[in-house]
Length: 415
Image (cartoon, rainbow, N blue to C red):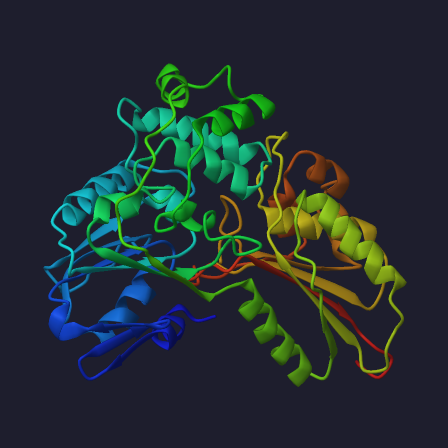
């Protein structure tokens, strides 16, 4: 699940040959390699690529989230861009990418390194759409509880680089996408809004989604005008290469190995976590109460990414909301601990990555003067869990492979 090694497992150099999947490129006859790295893992993916191809990158752009990051390569531009909402740097990066790719020739190769956060961090908007309008729409979409596939359908309809638009910008060069999946189900058109994935973008579908979500009436006129016209079909580029180099499954397998080393009987749930965070948390906790107790204890591991429909004025994230909902079900129950964690180290607009709860969490919240059920109804899981000392805080991890939930039930043979 580490972005650097994942890149190098799929980007293999032997002498003057570079292999990506089954495709082999002769570096002697590929005079110019362009590099584009975007997302929360952009820095680690870029540096891993430069280790493989230290003298072969002609020009590049890295779009990341590390304000102090500096790359000692004048041929590679660096942009620190916004997430989860686009900002001016997102637009500046999009213009820089379009300008760079306008130079490409048929013998060139564009390495596109994509990770979580790409949809917000890189934007080349359709003409007439202002940044403030994009920010407003994205903010309302993220609060709506809509699944990421629907959100990205709207984003693609308003962009000249998403939804395979990068392929048109890079033509006639060949594009190779090395992709860290942050989307449940690993659907290539949804990861990073499908920069390097051929697809038909439907603006009428985007409009229908906005209407269904109750967001159409408040949408900016320029965006409404854009969505009344279908975009031209994208084509005229070489077949791209796209490979998922790591996903949530890799994270779950690593968690399984660790839990096994600690002596737990381990089960990885095959169904991805989807839907409203609080409902998922309740369901996992209810299941926990029905599992038989094992002598050596059990660890049940879940992966995916839930959503939160924000109706309150509190603070929190999907993992915190899931954990607080589970804590209410497990209130007073001994021997059960649940952890819900965002793999990027950032859960919602907070300084927490998630939370760890048990049967005593709600009692600790009440002792602080907070009613945990009221906090959940207000989407204020952060303050409730913070009062109980249940928040998990970490630095940004430099990757994003969705979320992991670990349910531990301690057996009679464990302390």
